[in-house]
Length: 392
Image (cartoon, rainbow, N blue to C red; front, side):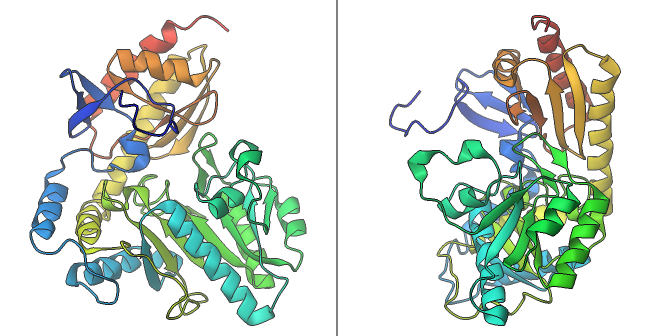
């Protein structure tokens, strides 16, 4: 391993060199089944022909231009993305580079909206315990997990309130007149794949409307088809004020997006926000290729079918190591009796790449293009690893 990198990641001992579809290859020529998609990024797998063609063609024309100007590709991408998010009332978009940046933009929108209408003292944002919103100082502050708040990074950005997910009484109590917005993930990814209850979100949406509090969905991990609908929050049948996207939005090219609905579309004005690289032509071309492939009923139905296949197969094992199985589409969490990290290491030795979410949850985020045969092969490897764990 190269020791020039800062020691910020708990890496698995493999150096990858090439990928195709749901397969990755390392320096020694060993191939692996990829059930990670780069943490929900490589939604079309590796070397997808449409994505390769789009990026290559755009690179030959125009890679980057300042946001003082529009590019034809970026303009079309923004228009298509807003149209794909119309179900939740989106009208405008700001392009960034990552999910953390997108959530920073959402927080700025919320604070300016409230400051403009109500003045000082109404700037706090409610997030949920178990949430994850990014690694910048402010999005860490917004994250509802103590393990992401070490003293070494203090002091944190003030103004965030954490309440238990699906606890409507706690939410109503938190909305005390000092709150500008509620920010929530439709499915909490990093803490173990925890979907929110539909009735809870609908009730929160009503409270937000009654009290003029913005409702903001962090769809960085769950969006762009991952759950079998283009946005996971479509299942709640509510109208959002802000939605953030990133990860799978450009299939591996860095891009993030903050989408704004009718109440927030005009909040940010000239000079309020910016991003040097955000939504540049190369990222936009990749994003258009993803939208062309993912934003259609047939692809979304296949994601749901494949997710059902995974969950039904694992449940059929009735394995002593396997506890609760949660998720939607190809965003799946499997609670196990043992620690997850040794399972990841053992699976790697058997040519399967997995993720964890919390100490004892396996996280499966395979690419949308994975075949049924590859799903069955990968799950067979996973079962063999679980079979060899010591009894709990």
